[in-house]
Length: 77
Image 1: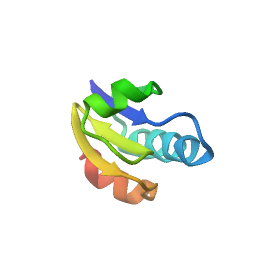
Image 2: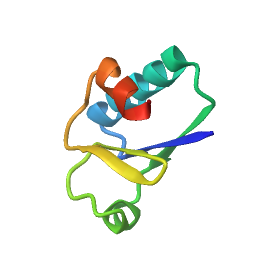
Image 3: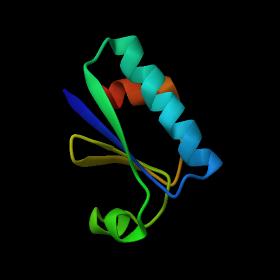
């Protein structure tokens, strides 16, 4: 199972990233879980200084932007 973490405080960009990640994972037919990390200390502990951020299986894949679902698919693959 892939763990997809969305790091951010819940802003509209964070919500867009959640939707794009969900869409990408569904397209790939993955067994996955999306976890939202909203607490600043938890975000900083992952080395992220700009949100939203996408973390896949513990690896930071994107920060400070919302990649398109197609780009997220490549990150998940």
